Image (cartoon, rainbow, N blue to C red):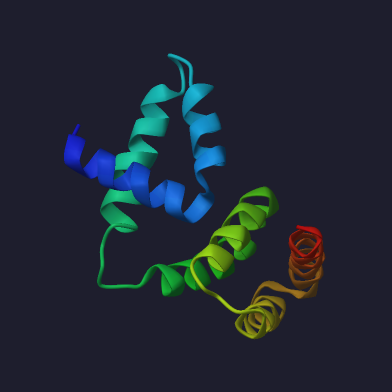
Amino acid sequence: MDKALWDKGLAKRKAVLGAEYVDKSMASATAFNKPFQDMLNEFCWGGVWGDERISAKTRSMMNLTMIAALNRMEEWELHFRGAIRNGVTQDEMQAILHQIAIYCGMPAGVECFRIARHVYAEMEKK
């Protein structure tokens, strides 16, 4: 394992997904899934998200469309929240959701809009 890349990945992961979520994932890791958590930190978050040639905001926008296409809505909500942290505006989110609906299908668009409304409503309460 490349410890510097792992550390970079952990920091990037916390910045995008939130420290509370990441700390919970790391604390609940078992002998079975700890190597996977390490792979996420080193390769996904350190290697890919740590590549500065694409901004975190752009990367978030890309992820929202790919995750919607894969119909992984629990992950989509997590990355939707991350996209907000990375500076994606509501206006940009609306355009992204329209893109998702056209290219991934209206049911995916409906589900993504449902999640977005829930997250934005939750944020307004705070």
